[in-house]
Length: 73
Image 1 (cartoon, rainbow, N blue to C red):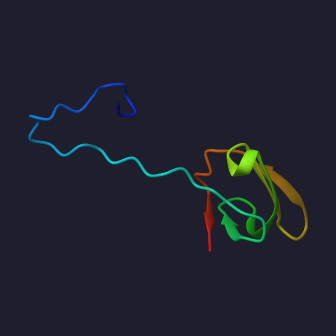
Image 2 (spheres, rainbow, N blue to C red; image 1 turned 90 degrees about the vertical axis):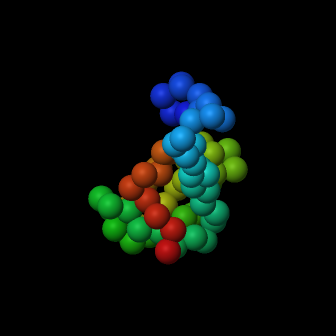
């Protein structure tokens, strides 16, 4: 199933949409966030599926999925 619930037919001339795997972060990963800047992951909840606790130097933030604005360096 695609993001919109429509399935890809095998006879379709268009390629099936490939969905990116979910982002996962581990303790110690260096990250950048569009709003908060550079940081380091200091904790993860639910194996990284629930939330990531990130230290951005001046503050700590709990970032929840989807991690659209956070990227691993």
